[in-house]
Length: 291
Image: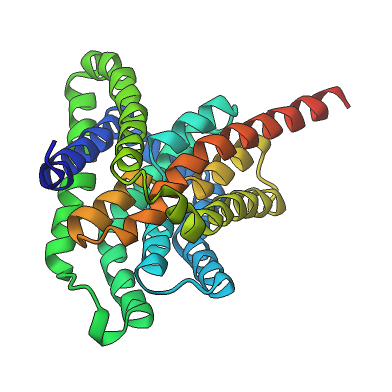
């Protein structure tokens, strides 16, 4: 497969299908959670949209990460959760409705905020000489087409053909997880000679972003006295970013391989940390029930 076709056609097309699958699982009533559980939703949104990029920035400063590598970590932090966060919320017995609501709301906001924030950080980390050109309006339009449009289309299908949507949803979600693994494996195979270097450069930073944000989301939810299911949902939603979207932005929109390194490392590591984190949360819940 030609790299150009993968980057310009396959990646955006697959992301479209992934976001379509999210839309198939959404109903208009799901957004009533914003009114029914405003504290949980607002806390999750603040943690994901404001605190998470700030954590990424502190990690960059602490580890002295520079240039395109730093931009890649910021892009990852700015991305919403995805099918993976919803799946692991389910496995951890968390509030799936809250997880899906947060993912979908942030997915709608991201196309407008992400390009502007990236430009600010590119000026900060790359300077005017090395800055990568990013047309704001074109980028917003492209992100809307591959994220918001398929969500809306999926919701429309769910409304008009609910039985079809229900039958198709598990297959589309399965495709989402499988494709993420496929992309990660493909990137590893393509860059097998550089993977040790990639992890040496961004492995620690990606792992820290994942673990710190999960712990922070869980801590904030606990301090806010949300129930355990909501704590799990916010911890996982804040801790799991849409690695596929981050890779698409880096490779397709910015056409910069270095900016995709953080997302590649992250997408590998989060499957391990998420399993451990879900196991810990379930053990905590079992302990509380028996004590």
